[in-house]
Image (cartoon, rainbow, N blue to C red; front, side):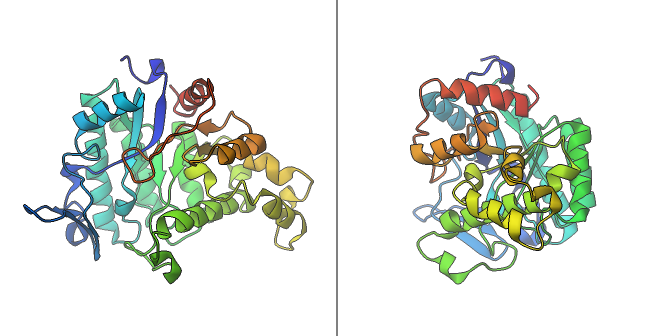
Length: 331
């Protein structure tokens, strides 16, 4: 392998749990407890996840990760924080400390496996100034390829305070990736219906991603920052299916900005966002292609996670996604 520039397949949606970041958020953890004969317990603040095998799995063992990548035909991955450990609602000092330690762990992986792995910087979004500082450190000192944030952290994505982060991405010439976390991990609880049937991970994530798309477009983030590249996970949630309804709102609702009032204006701005292809269904992928085209789609798997599945890509489409990823990642 010869790294990102020569890769024929690039996965931009691959989370990791890092040993060196355990306990870095102080009392909030994270903490992994493993006892013989008992299911593993992963603790984040007051939340516990039971029975997920992190250690001696691709999540924590890079050699196992690369062996699994080889089996899946993936040349290169850009690793991002585990959504359980965004820590977007804890106290600022512990959030900063955790992200610093985690990002240093990503640097270590990228140095040890430069032909196969790189990283996105986790950011302490409860303090935008601290997030900007960590983005600069992550990119300029640690060699990470962009920023990685959740969808929820106490302010909307179009809040004027967020402009500092978007400006930093443009100045550094790096993308920003947005991926949800389950509600209630370290922030406010979500709709109680999401506690049933794992809907926090399906319906909840899709709702968060769709709201993120709406916030970015209705809030005119892309008008204020025309050079920014923002990529959303899981095809943007339900954003493609709701295109007509969102576009209609942009034309007729009294709060809608004038920039979206013309026929086709909403669709044009939607096409400036990037989306990964972790959507599980050929018809969903085709809908994305029909609405936003192929130029802003990148390959994503949620590697080794519960929803890693056959990507259902048409023949030759991986070449398109890989070329797009290299543009997005400035390779």
